[in-house]
Length: 241
Image (tube, rainbow, N blue to C red; front, side):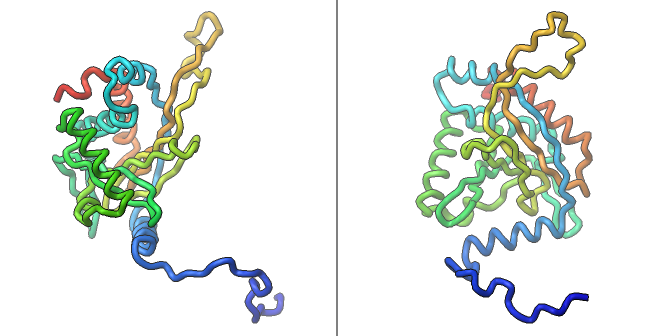
């Protein structure tokens, strides 16, 4: 057995900064620790084909890819309420209102303002709501109530040039979707039907869906992701509800 180390092994390594976590950063740390203690994290990954969605956005000349994508997620959650849910103290609750929390990085840490009833707003109302919320949290002028009541979270790491992400569930929610950066890949999921042998590049959005496996099965996640792809493939239906 080696001799017990009685001295600080970091002695001699100059400390640049030292701080006790407080405020927002401490809340985030405690929340993520709670998530890992109380939830069984599992993940599914998918390349979403988004050429049709991009072309729809360019033709409409209103809203961003993210606006239309969040709407597609919201409508998919309305269709698959198993993921539009919370699990806390042994109680699993699915909700009618789709209140999407959208993660925003600020100077004081990561916050998740909630886009309420994201599946029912019209495009103008949705854009105004999202822009206003993000502006308020970036300036740290939001209310605590703006961050409460989310039923599902989206985090967009594509803004930071990330190709893949594996986010942690935002408790007491049961699922979180991570977006990576859009890419173009020559890929086929059924090459045996490609008679020419040429695989055309596809415009793809890599996403990950982390879910609490204690209350959600993988099949429900697969169905949700397929519903999401269907919505993205038919963007003209996104704002008809």
